Length: 140
Image (cartoon, rainbow, N blue to C red; front, side, top):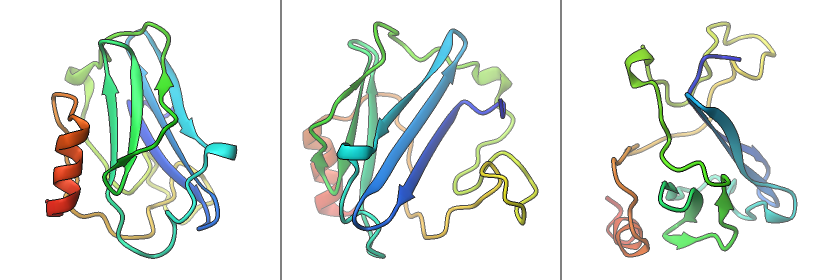
């Protein structure tokens, strides 16, 4: 394991881009994926897109929003509840790069994001669909 607590991957092309996210907690880990027949067409088109990933601890569900619109495929992590992350053990936070440092290798954990990220945010509460739509519309 890479000692990471979360991953978010975009894999594929403009016809079918898979979105994959993994969370590791004190009690286990799981992947939330939108791939195969649930891949997102048009996401890798070299244009700016607004992506929001939410996790609701009250029902252990993950939702993906693309350009202000919720993807219909909601993911569930059984009855996990709150993501109990060992925040005291977090020593760094990387956006756009894996946990490895050998960036010129073929190691999938070392590869870096090839694009631009603007206004990356983490919230301590689950945003509503209305709040997400408002952020997308205002491009904030």
